[in-house]
Image (cartoon, helix red, strand yellow):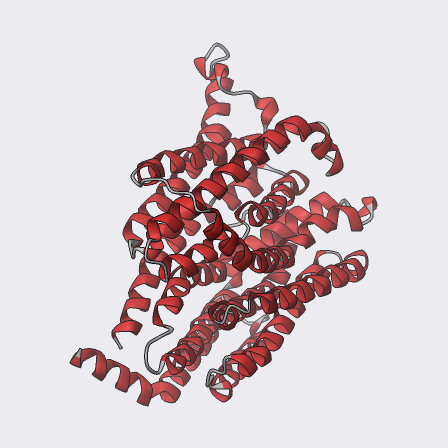
Length: 495
């Protein structure tokens, strides 16, 4: 049970950096929706979708490859340095190419008036790709506190620069036209300061990680790199398909929606709705940071499959608690987003929450092909999911707009979860308690549907009812899990 305590502890620390950091970062969204009209905020949503996809290209599965080879290598420092050198070379090459072709790239995605956006984002991508391995090294060495600190500094810097450029500078220049601020600020840049702030924050992160990057004796092993690339290439396909499933809709909407419907404004509204569902992403990311190295380290332990099955069950429980907490109190969240132009996007929040939950379940299931070195199956499943996502978006966006995109993502991740489960049970069977997991989904679904009948009630009665619904779900957990929870706590006390 010490393994469970360690996973829970690491998840809590990673979760602190992820949840606190993302929660802090989340507050930029209400700022953006107040300062920017939906069509301008659509630019941020659109370009960061490209960033997410290119980030996968630039890391090409090396994080997972690093965990796999550093965990089972007599010289983990060689694995670290080989990975870092490879990423430095590819990131540098990427920046050079973008410098030469930024105007062509900007025209290709309809930003021909702002090629500087492309260059700024390329530098952000290169820095973030290069720092991926130092962050992975911190996770492998079980240094979650340092990991969390650097992540929080990054987010704090990003927020501070956003506030400085978007709020402080305009006020200073408006009150004093001869202010020195005019040397570093131009109102014409506008939404571009969102990207500049991110760039400065990424640079600070790189500076903080440089001591760790220079502390080792560099060794480059071509044969090792080839093995790592052979292992990681399917992970690249998996990551690319996965990130496409999450972001391709935000790239397709401007191309598939009629101009008469103002697609960039619709994209901005959709992006705000997706941001509202960020709490589920926080939980999944915190879990992923802790679970991946934990999974590899526990693979040789006795009864590790039973442990994985138990982890899956509690992952679903916590995910459904987040789902219910968000959808039952969605009107409270609306008070934070003070621009009514974005309110219609709240209708897709439950769909996005469920989609993200199934993505987390799929990630937890997907460890079977990483541990058995059958990563090609992950590629097959993810590519299949991407094909479904793109096809559904092409079909649904022209008819239903961004709501069609939300359902496309949900259908995709649900399908990937089912397929991964059946392949996993064939090649690496784990005794998941499907009956119990389905029961929790059923209870949460019934409570959510029941909440529809409280819409017309007075706010006090409605939220009192929703609080009762939450208690019903929590009590159901304790009733169904009472024996196992008692056993876990007793065994932990003995340890």
